[in-house]
Length: 266
Image 1 (cartoon, helix red, strand yellow):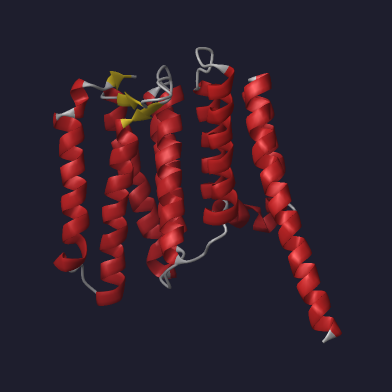
Image 2: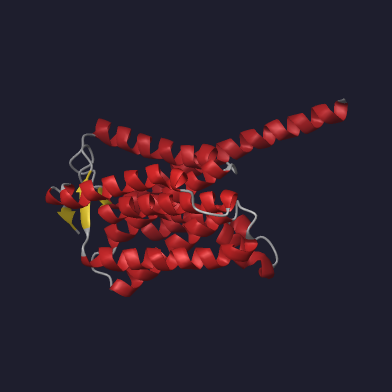
């Protein structure tokens, strides 16, 4: 019994330490970006937080980096989004609220969403990475060569697909499907590079949401539901994908036909 009490105590202490460190990291990241406006310093903080990825033998580095790509994409995207937000026209109170909300959302990612291994949570993690990663990429790449944007979309697509497919017992097709999806994402990125539309948020008008981010998440959702149906039934059942497909097509149609008129070219 004493041993069990000791194990419980250590488990509780480790949970507290884990929570405190993650909250402190989120706060430090937001503070560094807001007060120094230094992207290298903020990205360095993100890399330092990933020290465990390389704290193993070199032959495991690639596997660890690949398994942490989703978290890296989200963290880097948070840095870039916070850097691009213009708070000069906000009052001190609104600025404080904005930074507080950003910090709270990132803490939710670190403590609630990221640690979960249930497939629905894993799919949500991939979707968040695609949304934030694609938005950050298109926000900062307006004067970059198209090849860099395409490579960035390829990496985001591969990371998201590999992240979800690893929850299935299908190692034979996981690599092939991940690479296939990365090519699809790269093609979406190439098209969007030549036709970039973004929408400003109501409160923070300087924070733009590129149209391609929403479309990439929706198409990825349909792809996920299609593979999930095929995995469980050895075929893609219409009943499994009809609602996601109709929802995706409806949203894309509204974005392209209606909201393009109120969008902003980037």
